[in-house]
Image (cartoon, rainbow, N blue to C red; front, side):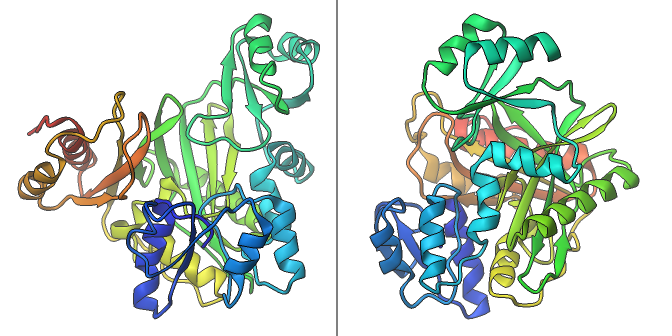
Length: 375
């Protein structure tokens, strides 16, 4: 797995009972996954020589992020390396314009959008769809990075001055955000988990509720079918997360991620097969596992670094007290340095009653990060 963040760390944990050994390409020995895995190589994912040396002897190469240059992925494939997902599929998670064009060609509903190269382009689009609107960098960006909501031409001009390539999208009035997480093997087998609701603050997911409360069976099946169709049409192998806007008129596709995704961390305790095990099964072309939930309600709350980026004082002691006060809550810490807004861990609670389970997850997360123990 290229990348050594929390996704690689949790994929490593899932590999162990499958009898698999996960090799990790890390930027540093201090990366979260590098702290726990035995087979770690330190290198630069942007350097083709480093990637080739890393891939030597691997059965399959996969990713915990989308930032490996696509031409490097193509070069690995030309070398005979099995890469999953392939460069052809990965392109649509790396290039937002290519993704929008492909989905439009497939007739899949998305927000209205246009590529923009100048303030004149943005102004014309704003006149068509109204202000404010959304500017997105076509490459890179995650957790709110690379996305700007601009109220007028002046604000748009400031963003365009960065010099990247952009597309503009209408700002959609939404009921809520959803995610449909699926997996697909090279053989073509597919599997789906329940559609979830994701709660965002400042562009960062802070909570996931599975299944999405009050979502009709018809709309849930539509979201799952949409995600499976995208996986098949784009040739995705492994886990695919389809981030969706639920509007009064239906569903719109917002973003795609071709790797394990924050919206499915709840599956570690909340499903018979976690997204991490399923990703391994898929890229190795094993039969996929059951996605049946283990409880009627599952809530995952992210642990985010505070504004000062300092490790909370007494965090180890708080873990001890959190386990005592909320014994049913599962804690996952990623071994990452604390930075403002950075995901450094998550907690998961399961049960029968949504408000009770949600309250337990939120209280445990608040206590771990702030020392405020709720009821």
